[in-house]
Length: 234
Image (cartoon, rainbow, N blue to C red):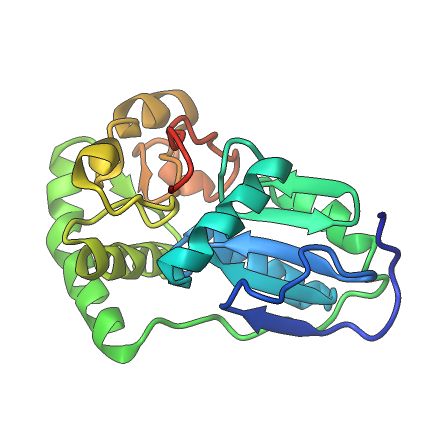
């Protein structure tokens, strides 16, 4: 059924999958990761548009609820990439901000005020800042630069630290790790795709690492995710 825009704009975060409808009339639905910088940016943009929105942060779900949520996502976006936005019969799979904006505009005729920047917890945020100071010179020596948007970089590093505490290794904050080291080896930061993506697009998939020449141009071209989960959880 195709949802039609109606009612007052509202954001209703949701971290539990049970009893949730993935497409309610007049509402958008966002599959996201709590650690993902692209997901955070999409949520911020959608909040600014005041679109009626439900958010499911899949990485925070209990394992028993994560599998059916991923199965539902696979029906709409077989690549299982985040963020993915549903609006009626339409799907926008990120990171493509303009696709998200066009879909959200159908549900939010008037833009709202600019929301506050989401912030990680104090302890994680402080550790992210320390990690930034440690890693920046080392990355420069290897021919890489961090995203010139320092807030974006710190949020990505915070997500990396969350994943390290969660899984025991720092998987990419913009991807949903399986929790199995062998399966996730390719997406342990810096991921196996960083060098090729930076060479081709000027930045990596989660926009943490840039080439020095691209660093001054900010966040421009979305980088496709070339890592695909091999199967849904059993």
